[in-house]
Image (cartoon, helix red, strand yellow):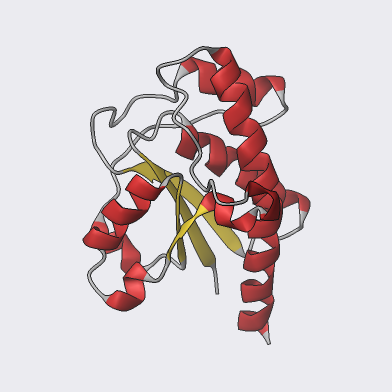
Length: 163
């Protein structure tokens, strides 16, 4: 059975496609690519069909990640097929929990940085859109740091399903 993870930010052109790309690479490195499906979406549809922000594409490629992407809006019907919905900040988490059809679906929503023990109390990945390239580098560092813990949690769930 496939375990499905969806990363969600605002427009699905900066943070969530970055997280999707990094986590997809982690899943492949762990040998779980046949067992874990990774995608992303936005809480809003402003950029539907657009590629990732060019600064996201640049930072991903410079760090050895795939960067192909088309933005889309999160559909509440997806909760039925998703195992985990990863919000990039607390505003996204609130929006997604409101969209959730059931309490069980709302419980699928988690903050990405909650998987990074070094994050402390600041669990938001800041939106780099209105800043310079350094914001995208900082975003990538946060995403990479949290992806290690997220992979461990997903691996535990996948191995639990196989047992």
